[in-house]
Image (cartoon, rainbow over all chains, first blue to last red; front, side, top):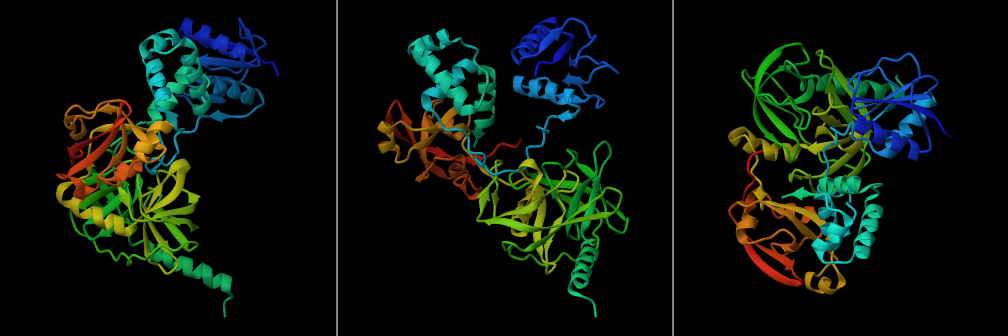
Length: 172
Length: 297
């Protein structure tokens, strides 16, 4: 289902990024608020008695949708659809992971090469630069990146780095 | 003569009345009140992961009396924070009992206003000793069939006979776990004397990796732990471990999971020399590292 989404963002670059993301999710981005099904707000306070709001990085509890500012594309799309359907959306509290066992959540088992590739893209290298650094072909790098995204259940390189390294690293 | 259900209910009421003698609320300004357990006449324990990060707190007893307390020590590894009360109070903590699968569990907490709250569940899973992400050894894995909030965790958990199972702790997704009484007793001694529990440290950040078939024969297993980061002044760094090495055994025990390393780094490991077997550039390398105490965090 296509929804009409209006976007308010303090940062024009973020607005462009959000607009692209919303369009990719199959929605239509409006230039003005009038007639919008959902208002997507990034890092600005709005009070709206118009369409339901999905707010990124907001602290006030009044809005229908509240997501952290680093919400994934899938989360933003799900939140837009949910608030349009009259539901309230909150991110599960990431600050309360709970007391857990070491290596409890079985991290996806990456190969040593995949970890090297992950670390390299974590340093901001492009596929071409990774290929040069590791002395492998561009085709092989793409193959490793695809495997990484699949194993980590990530939709982008940034998400893969975040999931793979930040959660998998255990210090002893 | 009452029927069984009424008798059962009365028994629960009795247990709750007894528990009020050692369920406490921990208050301090600028923080939400938390729950805790009065463990000894001058010692209270609570859940470290949600305890206020301050040094002083007020302990509110069920009868409304307030006692001043100071943090004596914290242990992230077992999720225990110990408070020392300035004035001893009377307490009659029940004796510890062995957990049993399927047994009733009464989970107590404080509501912050001097009241006691209680939930009832059963021991839904029971396992052997395990290691927490913080490296602590927990004597039993006791998980209950209920979830608890941050405000409630830290209170006592009793079984049907009124015996003490331990302290409640919220696990992943708020699932209630019990830190066994024996574990708390074990860490209280160092916490009250030194303020911390010593734990061995190698100074490595590790990530599990699949080993290629060619080196599985050398490593003995299909998995190892890749060294992602080495603390320069840490024991492993001094022994010559480099980022990119794959750790396949510590102290002779194969390391396919981070827990395998944690098991080798208990309090007794501090000051000992331990053998590290690594795969570097396809061949096996053996290094010796002198384990030091984990630097305070």
